Length: 169
Image 1 (cartoon, rainbow, N blue to C red):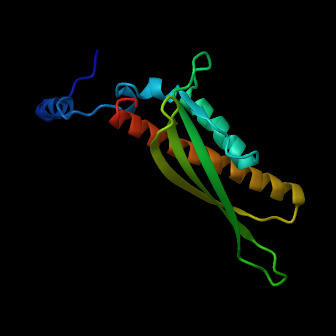
Image 2 (image 1 turned 90 degrees about the horizontal axis):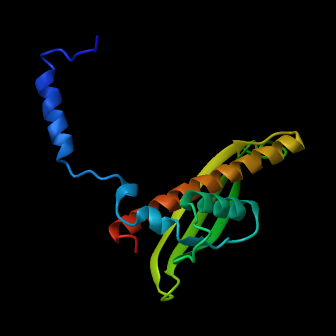
C-alpha cells in the first residue's frame, strides 16, 4: 500500500508544485558553461607554504581540472595569513589563537591575457593552545588545512557564479 496525502493537504501540495515549477530556479552548476569552464582553469599555487599548497590542491580538485586539454583561464592568488594570540596568561602565553586567511585572486583569459574576474575571500578560525608541543603543532596544522579548504570552496563558488552569469566566459 502506498502512502497517500490527506485530502485536506492535496490542494496546497498541488499549488506548491506548480509554483516551484514556474519559479525559474536553475542550479548553479546547471547553467551553460559552468562545469566545463571550471575544468579549464589552471590554478597557480600562490606560495609554497601549507595554506598555499592546500588551497591550490583543493581548487584543482574542486575544479576537476581537465589534464588532457589546454587551460582557458589562469587563476592567480595572493594569500595573506595572520595569527593573533588571545587570552594571555600571567606569563604571557596564549590560551587561544585566531588564524585568519585572506585570498585575493584574479581569473585571466589565457588567450587574450585579459583579467576577466577578480575577487577575494576571507576565512578565520580559532584553536586552543596547549602545553604539549606536538598537540600545538597538530592544532595549528589542522586549522590551516580547514582555512585553506574553506577559502577554496568560497573561491570556487564565486568563480562558478561569475561563469554562470557570463556563460562560461
